[in-house]
Image (cartoon, rainbow, N blue to C red; front, side, top):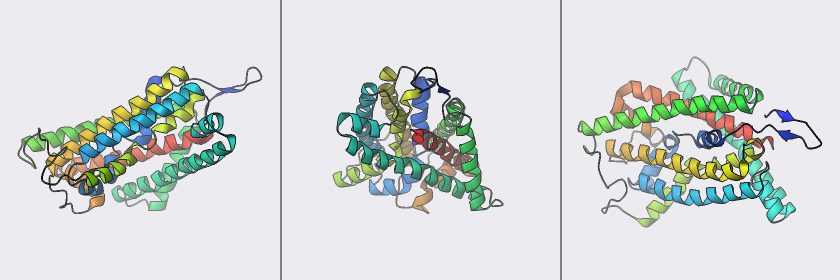
Length: 310
């Protein structure tokens, strides 16, 4: 929640979020480590060409991001889809659009609480699953109660940590490939186009799954009343979030494909990237990657809980 400025007859949220903060909020909600949630199934669906699917999804989502950004510039108020539909089309349609989006922002924190608790319980089984749910929910709620500035600073730190883990993961994957693992070369066209297994329907299906990783960039637009210069920064933040997030997803999917070319041989599709992390960097990297997954639930949950204050 933002600090409220009650001067005059028109109460307003304190404008404290700059372009960098908005971009980080978008990336935090998407989470840099998002491919871990879908990699196994999406890699199989695309027949080993998930990087191509991510590229297509990124381009499509950037068009949506641009549209959201332009609407945020035209109507620089909190409310996102609700406000845009209400003001540009019809108040009644805005009501239904608002409730649809509200359900999204209610369910997302609940889902990430449960996902984070599952991984945390696997890492520290001494604390029961329900205990981890309460711990994660309590920490996220407490940080958001402290205010949007504190939440933004916390997001910066957690996103930085996840970014470091992603870089470490990519470096270890490259090192493993150079050492003869998987494709044994860091330059390969197969993750983007494998003539022997390419199928348009498979790539389209994979791109639809890849879009799941981008969900959340639109949360930026709900912060219009807390953003500095929203008419200029909102559309930039939406596009930059999709672009930066997309590049991060593509790179992870690419190096993962090089390390483990046979996408049909995972021990479990649910934990495909953990298998790859073990191959690339052993149990230590797999553990760090697990911690990053737990951290990602904090960033997504924090952002998801913060944005529906409208």
